[in-house]
Each structure stands twice: as structure tokens, then as C-alpha cells.
Picture: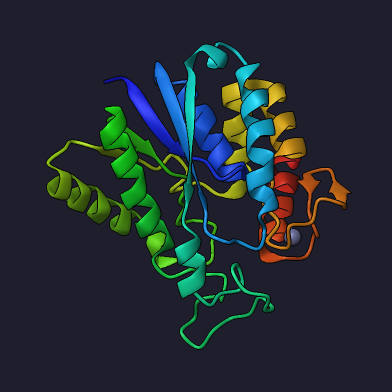
Length: 229
Ligand code: ZN
């Protein structure tokens, strides 16, 4: 049962989580979700990132199937800046309108269903409490509750791993360097995508992106601190 399923979006965080899993488990599969996100370019870079990871260390022999799940219905029921053509803004409840209600809960349910079918014990997600916008479905308590609910609801012993939960973006870059040295840092810089606006025309030392959306700002600031250390 030394196997894992990684929620892999094609962004910096999930790519780092995938590398983390490849350095620990014998067999690793990936799962991605198409929910009508405006930054669909994230989905387009996934195969490139997977191909790049296969060339690092012995990861090529460990990396198994990629499962792409169509969750268009999630885009249809949510009105957010990630799924509709509206500007990113703070809402009255203190959460930015990039928050897609229930998104991670739904992702975890579908991941468990695939893991169940594939006989996989470990599920890895790049959620993080430290650095992000306070999304309640990214919190440690939420993930612990999800693990219990999934195990009760499927009579299984899934283990949910959240390697980024307590580290910031600079430490995420450091973790990538530790796991896959320069090759992985370069792959993340050049081929992963994080920008909310789906911009891959502007090139920066930290990768492609508009440079001004909250996701770009976090990535850029984290990279600057990583380089300075
Ligand atoms: Zn951006």
C-alpha cells in the first residue's frame, strides 16, 4: 500500500506536492479537475509538467496514471472570480471572490472515489493555511474532518497528507529545491502555472504570469525571499 494519489492542478503547489510524493512512495498517480476555471491554461501545462517530472531522479518509474475529472457542474453552480468573468475583489464575509465554495471538499470526495477504485491509501493535496487567502476549505481542521468523513463513509483507511499546510511560498520553493534540486526548481519556474488571469505571455524570474493578481504576487514574493536566502 505504499502508493499515493496527488491532486495535481499544474500549479506550483501541487507540482511540489507531487515531487514530495514521488520521493516517498513507490507508485504515484495524479488527479486533475476541469470545473470551467477561467485559468484553464493550468490544465494545459499539466502534461508538460508530468513529462518534466519523469526525467528527474527515478520518478519516471514511479509516476502512474493521470485521472482527469470533468466537474463542469461546479463551474455552473458557483459565481466566483475563478469561474466567471468578474474582477477579483474582497467580499463582505472577508473572503476574496476567488473562493469557490465547497471546491476542495468536492475534490477530496472525487479523489477518494478514484483512490478507492485504484486501491490507493495515501491522498496528497497542496492546501495551505499559512500563505493563502483564508479559504476555509484549505484549513488543517477541515482536512482532518474530511479524512474522518471519507474513512467512515467508505469504510477505508485513507491518509490525507498536506505537506504545504504550515509553510509559506518561500519555503515551498525551498522544498522543491530539496526534493529535485535545480531541475525541479527550473521545471516549476518555467512550466507550472499559477496566475489567476491565465497569463503566459509575460515572463518573470519566477515564471509566467500577469504579475499583479494575488496568485502572481504570492509566487513572486515567495521566489524573491527564496533567492535572497
Ligand atoms: Zn497573475
